[in-house]
Length: 169
Image (cartoon, rainbow, N blue to C red; front, side, top):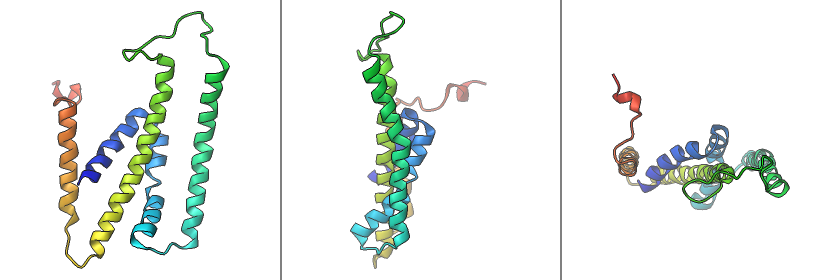
């Protein structure tokens, strides 16, 4: 139940902090993570095509994220001063607003990757429950996980979870 709730929350936060393309790529790698977790936790035999898919997925991640990191590094090393002679705006945390976008993108990418891993762990747990001799109903666990993530969202947002347009007539 806690894993499902965390997946729900991480899924939403990933889209808040990074681009939809990055979030979807990292979250949707979970079938490959399921294969890896299933191999180590359930003893599943992986066919050669799964290993090839894992390597290709890692190469795709490198192709997508390395240029972003190199560009960020080039911007950090190349021009530390503002060319307009103006100071960078500082937000409430005392950080420059120029750095907060990069920090939130990295944070979002990490959240999306964690979401994919947790989703793989959740799916593996469900598979393990299905293989056991006991008849375990995982639908109730999914419902409780969704309820838990909803309650956490209500607490964090202090009940303000619906858009303002919902209340306008």
